[in-house]
Amino acid sequence: MIKLNKPSCLNFSAPAMGLHTLRLATVPLTFSTFTSRLFLKPIPPNTLQTLGQFTRHVQPRKPFLVRAFSASAAVQEIPPAQASDSSAARPQWKASIDFRWIRDNKEAVEINIKNRNSNADLGAVIELYENMVNLQKEVEGLREERNNVAKKMKGKLEPSERERLVEEGKSLKESLVTLEEDLVKLQDELQQVARSIPNMTHPDVPIGGEDSSAIRKEVGSPREFTFPIKDHLQLGKDLDLIDFDSASEVSGSKFFYLKNEAVLLEMALLNWTLSEVMKKGFTPLTTPEIVRSSIVEKCGFQPRGDNTQVYSIDGTDQCLIGTAEIPVGGIHMDSILLESALPLKYIAFSHCFRTEAGAAGAATKGLYRVHQFSKAEMFILCRPEDSETFHHELIQIEEDLFTSLGLHFKTLDMATADLGAPAYRKFDIEAWMPGLGRYGEISSASNCTDYQSRRLGIRYRPSEPLQTGSKKGKASLPATKFVHTLNATACAVPRMMVCLLENYQQEDGSVVIPEPLRPFMGGIELIKPKLR
Figure 1 (spheres, rainbow, N blue to C red):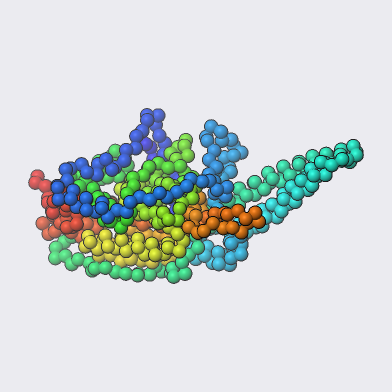
Figure 2 (tube, rainbow, N blue to C red):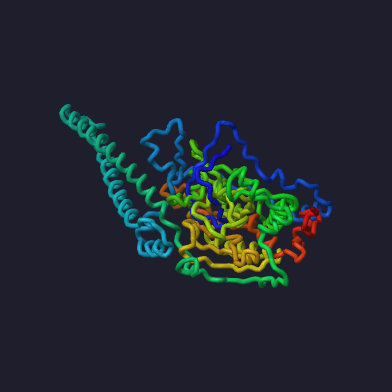
């Protein structure tokens, strides 16, 4: 049994997520994956032949990583049994944030913080960093003095002189211990305060709130109906496809059962999406749906007061995922990848869980905003110089998918205030939903540059000749660099269902299945009203 402290509801744009509490009963729980249900019905031979064709397009998996821990980005997890009250307040991990760059570019960083409506305290970060640098110099100075004393004691000395050096060494040691403890506390405080600083922003991103977002592309036009149209809730009820009432009794508001052809439609959407994206060289994944809270934080999702988006499991350091971006980002955590293996491109299926605290109103009704849903997410790790190209590739894949389904949509270059902390730039796609009478977001694609990789510790080693510049003439490996990460929604099932049901409804109450999905639904072309 799972008890939600604050039932509320779900947003596909994955804003910065906070923590929300789940209380687990003592009965063991099993969170099964959805993929075991993807092919419940036998697939016709022609469909299997189609699947065989697209799997041949998938690129063979390359050897890609060497597992290594960097001191600057190492995970410092404290097991619950060993954690003390004093250690609980310390950060459990450290991000490789370039504090010197932030200090040297403080004007640009300050403008960026303002444009993104962030509450980051840049002044505190710079002050803490300068204090840390000064304290490090003091520590290094004392260490040098201590070493000099140790060197002096190696020679022949008068007893009185040796005794004086021993006392001086003890004094230096005590002072050094105190300063080192202060340095650790200062470094921890700096890490905590600096994590709130958002990523920098692409120069072409519009400045302002959501209303300032720019339309970069529009596809199709709204369908003109010659009969009174229904929204997806009414269609779902009339066609016996969706049951909110029973789910509300079982789980609470904003949960739902899918029934009959709606179940096949969900599986068809996911299988068709996977097949299309795999043709582009993406490796399919299913992911854990429970992750450590530190992974959520490293991906840039942070608590924001009462408007939390992440369910945390009470009494543990674990959370339910709000997007597959989080567990996929963690696959290569604390790793050094080979440049020859990049880019790494994944298409991941998962269930997603979001509290949607603070969400209310007509815009949230039905399937549009729910607590739990199925989603296929694209994720790329690449070299820094390639990330902008791959960002455009991701949005092109999304646009091609939705065009194939005959949807009318527009692509937006989202304004600064609508960017989550990790995003350098974000494109959203909003599709026309005639039953709701408005456009609704169905996907997004974000370039996070090195914001997540600096927190997750994901680097790559350039394929360059060995360096021979050392004094001893020994060859050395080229310095590692942080990868860039990108993510994009390929298919968020509930909102895709809203679009398909509302746009493909017929005057007799039936709903036409778009042609690309029919092979994945056993050839079903039409969802008809059930005979009473």
